[in-house]
Length: 447
Image (cartoon, rainbow, N blue to C red):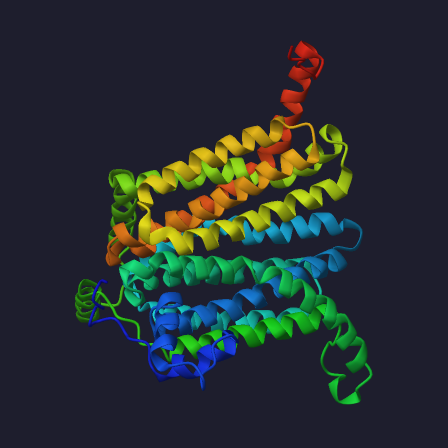
């Protein structure tokens, strides 16, 4: 067993007291203290990461609520051009990352990461708290732009902090938990959003609340605001270890003048880009995740067409595809969490990528729903493994001084690849369908 790093915060009384609230199977009164400690260390590693994970969990829940509410609000405000308004608002959440992420990465590597996350949470809380009173598309686009800028700073800052909080042998578990917090909260958020409709009806006639909007979307925004405030409170009380070089750089900057050195900023951006290109592990992980996201992401826009036109399963078949993909990702996360100690991460990353591609080809070659769903499930298992292993390898092979820039670039790459998958997938489908119809009449018969 690897001895704990003395600079890492150890699990403390807070984790002892709060863990049973989130893990009901742990009996804080009846279970021996040593067994509880083993459960804690196996799942979270440190109290500091546990707090950070809870902050991510509640803010992700609020994010999904806000996403659902802002989509409906955009459609309502857009009236006759609802689809165009939704597209414009979503563009404001995607496009800024392509231009601002490099600068955001440099700032994260310069600034105190805890303050970055707390400030971003407070700004996001203020913005979503005002959204119920926005009545035009321009205001909604501006709010989405501010929210996206804060996310561009918060997410890489959080990822750059994780290796400072978690022992190296717990990084895979930490990334599994982060993935579960980021995406596993969506179904719960959808249920809560549906329940808010009943709550809105119940409190809609209360005179004391006539100054506030109390419809379903407004309540979702208020709940989102509370989650951001809760996240800011939890993170503000964390002790986050800092790399000595960043501390020295901060002290040096404090002695210099307060002007922004754009030349130095550009130099640090180039330095980060050079590190991505020259480091073989970072380069391979980015290329692997990029190609995997483009291929796997096309399942979303093309799955419904495949289910309807090839399998004849209609919308229900597409729903089965998405469900199988989700369960596959969850199975991959769980399987990797239990086996990561015994497997070489680099080799497993490569194998998962190849198996994911093979399963995607095999699934697209099937003519029955059942067989196609099996391969989609395998694709999900490999996709979850690739995501977690990719982040873990970056955590292990990137020094603290570069992490902000590396993870900012990675999140930008993720957005770009998903955009390419959603936009190019249907276009390629039409092109290949035309070629197939011309050359083989859309069917190949094997003897």
